[in-house]
Each structure stands twice: as structure tokens, then as C-alpha cells.
View 1 (cartoon, rainbow, N blue to C red):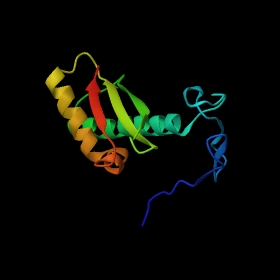
View 2 (view 1 turned 30 degrees about the vertical axis):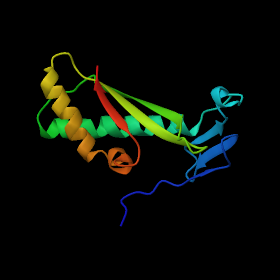
View 3 (view 1 turned 60 degrees about the vertical axis):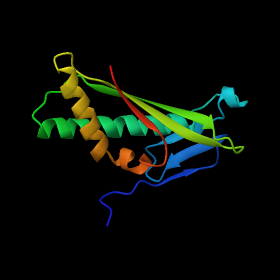
View 4 (view 1 turned 90 degrees about the vertical axis):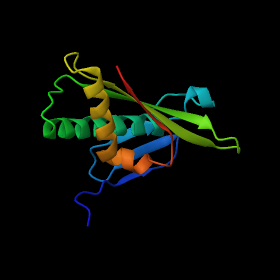
Length: 136
């Protein structure tokens, strides 16, 4: 049984997306790069924000268990929409994690890899879309 279930409804890339509790209500618009107006957010931005937030929280939990201080860390997710060669598109993700300068590079890399093993978004994407992990 789920501890929490998010419920959202959308009317399409040129429309609106909203959550059942009313906390999310955004205008959606097709990106300019795809021939749209770009006057609203898009599914790729929403996915990037969700993945970045989830990965950052997962990293805080992993770091706490390993007794590593990651104060001031942040995660930036880049979600690309790329042609799939069959007339459609696929997603690709790059996660850029900014870690404290005091954390040795190798320890930071291990922390990022460990986080990728526990983050729910990482579980959902594993084997489905390419995810590149970068520090810095």
C-alpha cells in the first residue's frame, strides 16, 4: 500500500495541469523550440523539478546515514526531449549535483552513486531513459 499518492490532471501541452489538492495549478504551453508559444511551463520542466527535488532529498538521507555533511548542496536536473528516430521523442536526463567544497571528490562521487540507488525517480527511470550523473 502506498504511503502517499499524488493525483494530477492535465489537458495537454497547451493547457493546464493541476493537482487534486489545489496546491499545483500551472499553465502549460508547447515550447518555442517545438513550434509553440512557450508562454507556460511544460512536462519536461515539471519532471526536472520533481527529479531534482527527489534526488536532493534522497542525497540528504544517504549523507545523514553516512554521517556526511552536505549543507548547501543542490541538484540541477536537465531533462532533454530528443527525437527517438521513429517519429517520436524520448527523454534523457543529466543530474548535476553541487556538493560542499570540503567534501573530497571521491567521497562525493560515491555519495552521488549511492543516492542514485535509492532515489525513487532513479528507480523509475533506470533502464528506461539515460541518466548521466555529474558533480560540480
